[in-house]
Length: 449
Ligand SMILES: *[C@@H]1O[C@H](CO)[C@@H](O)[C@H](O)[C@H]1NC(C)=O
Ligand SMILES: *[C@@H]1O[C@H](CO)[C@@H](O)[C@H](O)[C@H]1NC(C)=O
View 1: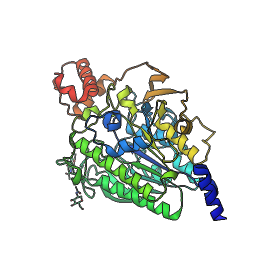
View 2: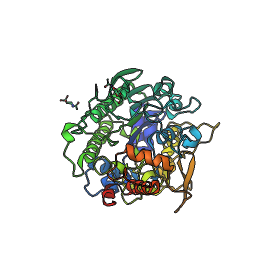
View 3: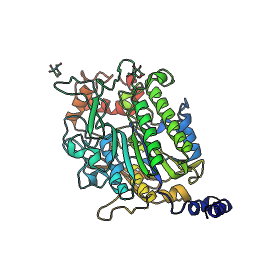
View 4: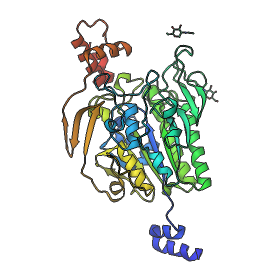
């Protein structure tokens, strides 16, 4: 019987595969989410140093999305949107205590993902998936917000950014968790050398991913791996073997190590023989942080502004889908996509319906990916609870431009120790204008005096 089925499979080509295997096995899902990586950081997107051979290869074997967006130009709300398929104004990830500011950042904040939200891993569990998050969670650091309370089965990583070092008495360093247990803290147990930029975290996160994939393959269980690493978020870091290897400085070293790691993850899937049964998507949480550029921030290619703004540079993300045997190699899509679509697309891959008791903003991209369709839909650009812009088809209308309150501009400027001579700026209006140019022009900001 088995050999008859096998014969059928050979006779029919890929279509016969399901017959040979019996019921179609659930497709594994790997989401590779970068931190503050810009649209222009990959060779495939035109970065001139072309230092991302593995990601460029991934694009050549899969599909490049040129018009792919985040749901918010900040880490926390963007991640909340990805995992709920909903805009931050719906899933609660905004605040109104400043002009449309909206991040759950360490350590002063107390909020997090509400229990009423249904996260992708909670839903995938119903289809028998084992779910792992590696890296940055950022949806709340208090116990009720722990990722294992929101559908993940395993976690290795941190609730927040690797800011610091802090002193451990008044303000502790950010912790790292393995599942429920805190296993150490940044700087103390997981070293980041701020002078040299050396840290081994990307290697640890890579090894975690490879081990998890091997374990799942051995147990024949479908899996969802959410690889949310943060080497490209300032303070950027790389391990010793990558330090000094990029033409783009330390930021480029971090990108090169990530590129190498993605190559190893894809190769691992191939070597285990599960690449045709694993959907992989690479993207970033928001645009490059131009305020950290050029040493600690990336490139948004030709686009205006960056992180924290709803201009293209803050919202448009590098995006690549990879699924050998399913996605035709070398594809390029102009579909208006969103990180929220990864929620709906993943459910579709698992054979699940999106929840019907709430508004879901993501759409299923499988018709785009597998049949090259273009689905008409608008993209909304929020900052906090303020609608800033909307895009439909070729048109993007800005209702409002990026702006904080005058008071907040003053505070931000001092905190960020800008290269500009902001402290001496007499009038707040001038200060705000300079902040705006600095955020938008990044590397060139020193020329504005
Ligand atoms: C920790 O930092 C706080 C705030 O800067 C300072 O007041 C305190 O003295 C420091 N404590 C130690 C033990 O260094
Ligand atoms: C990284 O790991 C290597 C090898 O274990 C070790 O020698 C080095 O000190 C580590 N670096 C940091 C910054 O932790």
